[in-house]
Length: 213
Ligand code: DC
Image 1 (cartoon, rainbow, N blue to C red):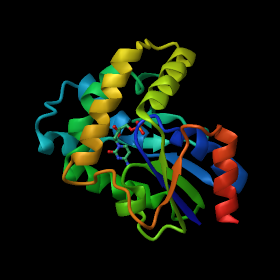
Image 2: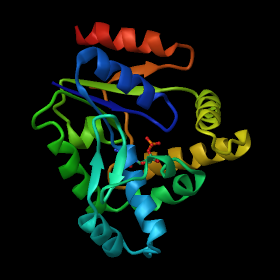
Image 3: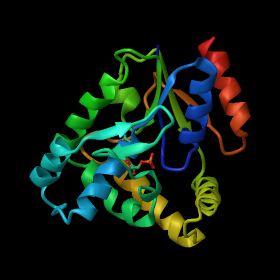
């Protein structure tokens, strides 16, 4: 079984997908963390990120893994604590815009479904990675609510969290996620649309479980 979930930054996809996967005894895959890991490598190794060729080459040479307990490994090193910074948020959009990067990511993402039931979340999962998924959801929330959630999440992680800065960063990412030529975040008639602005996490998960049953 494949459950695909797309939606904008901060809509709660991570928390909700994780809980859903637990209830369904499926594997949870956060595809944003794969793009984050690549962005981390590009920044760390001073790779020219304006070159699609060099970024695609860096991905080809990298060993990106997601462990069962949801840690992100880059060439065996646990980089989970370093991939959710504002520096990564500011630089990730250009890396996500490259077709040759997205193609490689999709191959990796499809491989996760070979031996497992999966709950996979991202931006192009319902449309490009698994257009034939068993269930497709679009999880949304207002930008104010999404900013509030990210501020709280960052505080819990001990990261900097300035409301205005995060609001702007989410707005910019929404714009580039929704307007890029290749792999844009889109709403389609096949997705089940959920606006979680006024719903608790449990309510969203319960609703999804009802749909799936
Ligand atoms: O879900 P997130 O905020 O951690 O994702 C980080 C960035 O990665 C986001 O701005 C867009 C990009 N992304 C993407 O282009 N395609 C995906 N399937 C998942 C994430």
